[in-house]
Length: 155
Image (cartoon, rainbow, N blue to C red; front, side, top):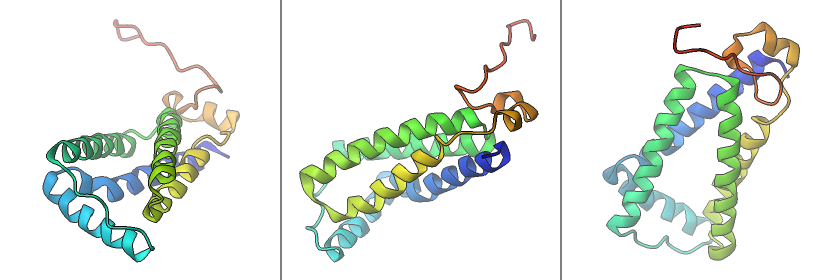
């Protein structure tokens, strides 16, 4: 795929994350999200989600905050390198969501595992080497060309 298309994918994945995880950023928005996610899980045939203690909410909000910052970075400074890192993160998230799915059987998790894994795959598709060289050097995909070295002297 060409670099321009790839960078659009990186931006789209950042928007997806921003919209999906904004509700995980504060204890108050998370409480609403938890209630709705529990209702969806029950609608899909699963049980109500367990109540979260303040410690669990802390971890959920920390995750939500980090993903929000990561999303804004990818929107503000879109680069193929960030897409590759995001792909790795998505494979890790998919693995842990699958682990939770195996242990809980919560059907709600399918709504997260599938898109997460797909985003990971598309962000690891090959990027045309010639297109990457024609673009901004910082937008090159890893494993296809080296990033430029910069010294502390501005070179």
